[in-house]
Image 1 (cartoon, rainbow, N blue to C red):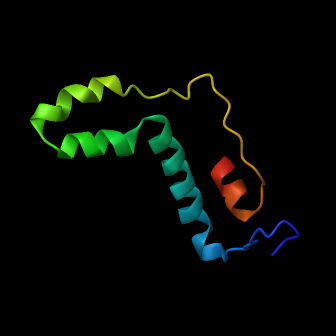
Image 2: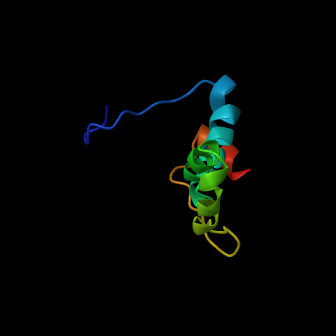
Length: 78
């Protein structure tokens, strides 16, 4: 634990790439409203009109930052 009561974890090499891939997946899912769209889609055709209300945000022209370039951050940046 750090002074700010934050857990510091150094993952083994075997989980670096999957963790980086999961991080990128979460970034993309967040910007496209994926979870909310899925919830609407599984409710059935009557709810599908609501899908148009949830327009995602394109990452084109945007800056995405990585806090820390340790093992996982370096893989994510690749």
